[in-house]
Amino acid sequence: MPACSALGSEQIHANNQARAIRQLGGEATAQIEPMNVRSTLENLRTALGGENFEINTVHPAFIEETRAHINATAARSFDWALEAERTHTRLFAEAISPMDGAHPKSWVGEARDFYVCPVCATTAERDNIENCTIRTTALERLEVIR
Image (cartoon, rainbow, N blue to C red; front, side, top):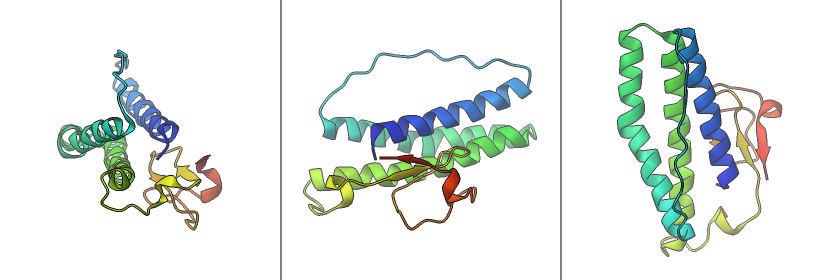
């Protein structure tokens, strides 16, 4: 998965969650931390670890909190983010696999398009999809990352 695809997806999550915060009367702020760039394999492993942390810890806690406060907009935003993070986790794991020697033949070395839903940020690498797998956003509305 190209870095621009992952970054675009995270921006969609941030925008969705900022919208929910504004609806509650708050204002979303962010602090950008410097990145420590390492080898491609180390960067992919770090990204995979971050996605797994969000899937297993962050999003479930946020979903529980938003549902407890009956905030459908925020809950939907975190539900979408959780599902999108699962697709990102799979793609990062697939990118790591040939580098570890587990599957030397994979899509990773091939030129291909990725499709990012502008609503929920799920990412697909298949060119035979008809729509977003989470929101059913039509293929023509998905952002194509080459």
